[in-house]
Length: 203
Image (cartoon, rainbow, N blue to C red; front, side, top):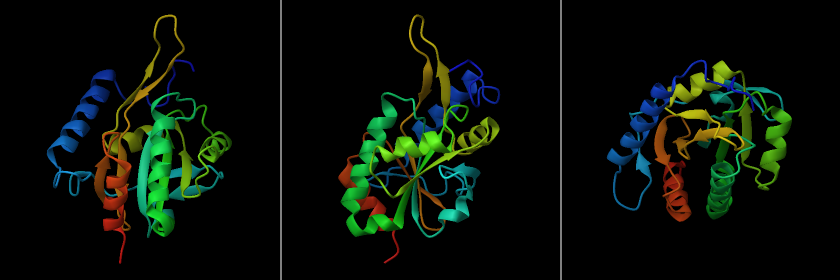
């Protein structure tokens, strides 16, 4: 991918790094109790976006109202973090059993110039997961959503190596009303995440 990376015009490296530090510090300081995913209620805004789904349809946060949502920023050409994170989220959905139909994963690409609806749909199909939708949009739309949730990502072009995008593995979790409630990372066991998701589901 060229250096006209999605979002690079909107974010300088310093601002990206600062955003990542804020997110990590916030996640470390708001744990409700040991053994549970980090609580972020009141620290992040309600879910709001206007993007395109992997079926090429315009969607907003209201499209998924009534479901517990897990939003993850990644891209289909990612060779490390994304496959691992998506495999973990697939396992979480399996652990939820029948409750999985009341939760949904939103895979937001940080590489919209390459990740159109077809690419996202093909990528997610690898995980054999019905409860997931890929989201894409313009670089400004993706950059604005990332900034809203203090998510940092940037292009990485190592000398003599293949370029890619550096990004975190945070999963932003919203309740059925679209309120930000939890922030999960790769350090949270799948079983713990599934248990905390159940607590967000209406009885």
